[in-house]
Length: 534
Ligand code: F6P
Image (tube, rainbow, N blue to C red):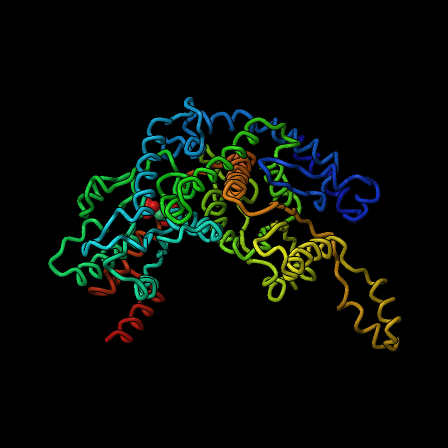
């Protein structure tokens, strides 16, 4: 491996010495050669700092880290999450194959989901007043919120009209209050989505929702208004949710990989069972691609290798995701958890300190909005930030001229980042515009764009449930391949625990006496909070 890493370093120096645009001159059919098509998605990676030699090195990277064996372990249910002694079988959730691990449990849960979705849509389920449910509020956080919220938002075009779905995550009372303000308790169904059924935000929000419902219902029983999705059914039942209204989750599905399970129930309610199933099938198509394609033609592995390459050799510490689609606006938030909770690790799978950085900071906004805020830093700043542009060719308003503007802006950003503008070009432009020589000399450096900034463009012909499923699975597997290249565990998240423990100590300090063991800054802020709440 050391020898391979040295060859990557030498190769980086060669590529760094010549502009990215030159690669298009030396390889006239580069755009075609550096594009892939899989699971109905297309990826143009020709605007990346890579050539045929880089792809060979990536192939060697995959071989030397045994990516193929790791992929098989993932799909076959090996204990890939060693610190928790669990498999990570989210791929089984979207496989129709009877041979897939856990097939029977998955099929039974899907049947339970389908029955509920169909009954809701047929207005057969009623609340305490005998009226059918018209609104569903999903209370969950992290993986029990971000995936379902993103997919439901993205598939707006497919929404069922008889039931509306809402999402509440934050323990800040304002989110639940604002959501419930427009709803009728008599026709509102609450889903408590929590794998652990132990999450403070979710449980306290559910208690508040129950209080809201019970206040409206008076003497009536409100049990019919509550559903739980959890792997801890005993806790849900103890909490007061009838066993028959508990949907299963399992410890072999990570929270951030769980939208394909019953955690996806709000999606299925919003878009109907057939569309939810199409989402699963799109993801399954990407699963097959990841498992079967050779590495140089393997979309998730290739995106992972590029990110590894930029992190390890080009000093990238963040990755920007720009969906040029209003419907996909929550994708960056979803990817933040998927990527940063999975890859933010300082020790390898054996507990030894890693020797390179891991996990990039993922961020993003929908285009074109980002162009008018942070894109300046991308074009002229000093940071090296690879970008994923995600575009939809045939939008829902495809006849509208704004749709063409949207796509043109997407392409113009990736092109401008690559080509930049040299000092000589700027000087010529200033001269042509008649700017006097002294002023032109002063102004010119400010107008230079270094260029050479790499990006991928992922193109969806249109935004369908299946293509969305494939897009999500693409990123899940990219994260998996990255964890293999960095030799870290993508499926645990011990780092979240410290903050949770600390929050409980501080909550007690706020509610009772400040604990002298706390540091001065924390004690001072507790004092400020208490003064404001006297
Ligand atoms: O706080 C992090 C986390 O553990 C995530 O991994 C998870 O998705 C989220 O909390 C919610 O957990 P749960 O579904 O158990 O409520």
